[in-house]
Image (cartoon, rainbow over all chains, first blue to last red; front, side):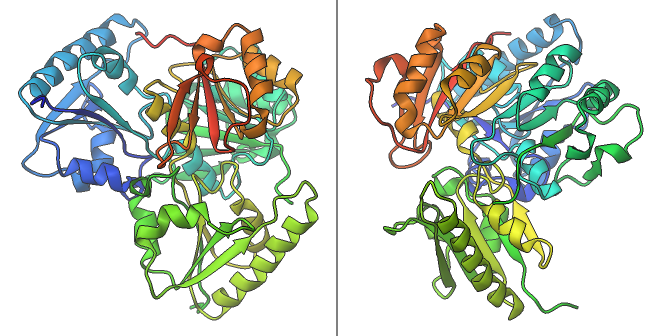
Length: 235
Length: 235
């Protein structure tokens, strides 16, 4: 029997604490250490979502990842986090790493998984993503039957986004933030403005749902998703 | 105050009952009626997943939807279900409709939503999808950073599937079933067999994960997902 701890990458959902899974909830009551990403100015969103379920006596381990274009500072941050988490595991403590949404859908947990999965027991617990939460908030399907659904990160070049949006039935554009005006222009050029809505902070305290045509130009929050649906909702 | 009940479309996740959300779990203890899709030969998968959380005293309402190419029998089934659910709502009972995975990601709940959301209070509760559950089971990210992720239903024509798979970093092919040989051939033709794995019944009792190259030709279960990842897992 190994006496080393397990590392759990736990998807905690899009914002509403009630969208944690029963498994996430159970694991949070059994681990000795809870780690989470935190911006340099503090205020971890992941910790905020899971806060009602983090026991008081747990060891907390914030992982500060600099948001820079240069990857080196972030790499160093994950290297440092690997060292800190490894110490806890080797001393027999189980560690939960909190991941907004799902750990493996555009999540940063993959960088810890890549560093630790060969040497330690790493378990990934899937979570509710902001994509389906956004569709639920909007009250419209993401995709149905034999629709193709494309998940497109907004920072991609405009010509690639345009051709991908043209050739599909359903689209979710993520990481909208400062790319909103570019995206809005592409959608307008394709005549799809009436099919599009933007969902900000789905299921969170600041949730806001707006038809694309009603929103003026300007920057939007990073955690905004634009959904476009050309499919037939009737059956 | 209205005395009519609410209809909840509840995502119950991919198979493991512990992947229900806290919200799904709470709602199941408050509704008077639990409805779910059921094949003509019985044995509802959705009911099976949520079984540990369905109170004994609840009214159960199986909705049998014929799996035919002709849409008319299924339309009739949803029309009949709408009549039955509406009667419960109008008599003041809350109704939960159980949806495998998430209600709005290739889910049949949209047909009830479309029929009832104008006349009644319909709430969609997102759930964990088989896509992220499959990635977690496989131990490999679905998509990262600025990858494009495409969700492709296997029944689509081979030429469309081939061109969509070629022009992207990450792919999830759903509804594999009897289309397995076609899909395997397309992936081999693109030289991507080494990047692909098939996950059957993710997180369920019959979960099975196989690298694509190890699986002989033949039909696979309907609830199989093939994941292809060309992106860079390192950072």
